[in-house]
Every structure is written in structure tokens, then in C-alpha cells.
Image: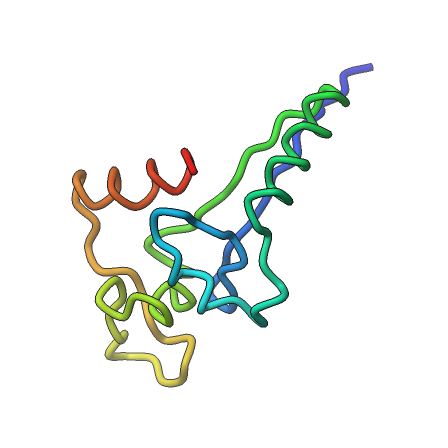
Length: 110
């Protein structure tokens, strides 16, 4: 039997950004609650546990969609969608290569 030991971690979404970044600390302002955040210790423990169990973690940062929570701490990262109303109607601005490297690569390396 084939068994895939992969934890696809949809760690952030439009409604919440619970991942603590040392590079961009205001991103967690978009979490459901200040206490509902995976801090660096939580993340390290999860990675260690998964590694010990032979599980590969694949974190997902879904952009350009599902980024309304990013704009809570960094409004300049999102733009209001003109055809949708409500708080969740924000999407990431156009990400160029340098912005992707600045945001995603540094978040992933925290």
C-alpha cells in the first residue's frame, strides 16, 4: 500500500493570519485572536514532531487570493476589490518577484 505522509498546512487564510513572522510581526494582527497564533516555538515543535514521525510539512500561503488578513497589519499589501463588498473583499496587490521574495521567502525562513 502507498502511504503519503504529508501534512498540507493551510496555515493562513483570508479570515486569519495565525503564523508569527519575525520579519513581518504585524501580520498576526490579522489573526482571529492574539492568543490564537502559532508562535516560533509552536512551529519549531510541530516541525520537529513531524520530522520524527516521517511527515513532511507543506505550508500554504495562498496568494493573491485569501489575503484579507494580511491587510490588517499591513494595509499597503492589499487592495479593495471593486466588485465585491465586505471585509473579506480585499486581495493582494500585484506581487512582483522582489515582493514575493521579501514576503514569502523571508516568512518561510523565519
